[in-house]
Image (tube, rainbow, N blue to C red; front, side, top):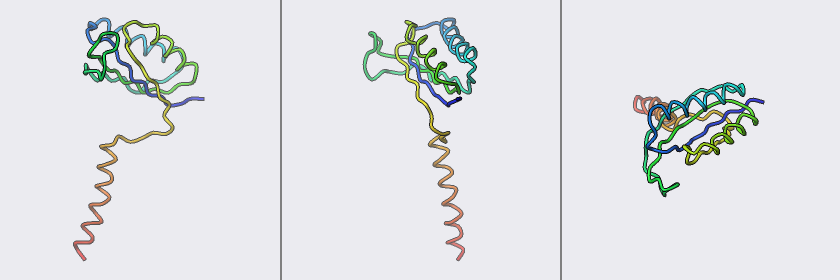
Length: 122
């Protein structure tokens, strides 16, 4: 059964371009070989951590959004756990597709605006 997942991982902030490309290639390869479908891979950049992790004050964040099944998520997390470059990761099963908060706020204000205009014309 195919399920929707998102994973956020924090990697060491001082990795070179080649190491980052290798890490993202490894993740996309795992998803592809386990018959998953990758929708989004975003580099959120280097940010300050709330507390030091393995003596690192900062970490580079990556966001993954993909579809797959339970063996895929098990293999992905196993490989991330074994990789020394990865400081932390968290995978979450998405129940249903959620709109971005900004998009939801725009939709709500768009619904209110026509009603307000109709009240003014009366």
